[in-house]
Structure formats: C-alpha cells, structure tokens
Length: 173
Image 1: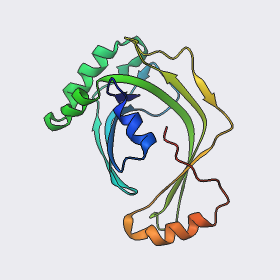
Image 2: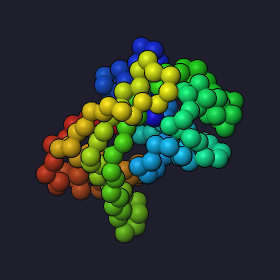
Image 3: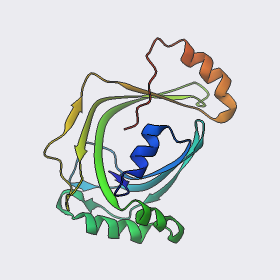
Image 4: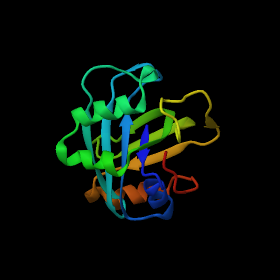
C-alpha cells in the first residue's frame, strides 16, 4: 500500500526522475488481503541509484480488509518513531495497492541480488475510506527485473547487466 500527497508528489518525482526522493508504503508478504502482518517502510533515494529503507514492524496482526484507512494510519503512527511520523503527515493519502509474484536470485557471495516480478496487479485507492481490492489493472505480459548490489560492486554489476538482452526502462511498482 503506497501513500502519497494529495497532489501525488511521490509519483511525480518518480516519473520525472528526481534523484533525491522518498516514498512511504505499508508492506506485507503473501497473497492474503485479510489478516496481515505488515511493516511500514520509508524508502529514500539519495541520488543516482543509491538509497536506503527505514522499516518499522507493525505489532500484531492487522485485519486489513475490515479496517478503515484512518484505523490503519493510527496503527502505523503507534508503531513508528516520532521522527518518521512526519512522513505520514507529508504523504497522508493511500493511493495504490500493488501485488505481484516475485522470484529471488542471489550470487554465490550474496553481494548481487536479482528479483523478477510478474503478474503485476494495481488497485487504485484514491478517494476511498477503506481498502478497495475489487477492481484492478493487470500487467500479465510485463516482467520487472531489478538488480540490487552494494555501491562497491557497481562496476561488476553493470558488466553483468549489460550482457542481459532486455529492454531497460524506468518502472516502479
């Protein structure tokens, strides 16, 4: 579940390629929408391809499908540090739920990680007070390949990536 400002600042920054940007999201794993064990993440991009995440576990199981967004925001506020609550004020609007199936691949030394995301589905959340998962947009023919590596492995990662015959585009779920 992605949060944004009322004028979609996070989305606009991403699509415009702004180097330093942030996004706030609530994340959980698995296909369930009801009882979930979620985390709140603030993902910061600090320029070029560098960034980091701040992750806050949300205590207990959240009944996502039976909750209002006001209740969900209150739970997040209770579990997030004071300094990170500012992100809920900056990005108060639930805007999108995304789901996908993911495969993980790691190098032998685990310094290079590749993920393949497929069966992408997006559920628009604008102007709703409770999570809405009835209608979605699907992208069944798109596979998102993401390569992650530490900065010191940038050269070797770029050598490996250049040999993969894929069309490179900007795509953020």
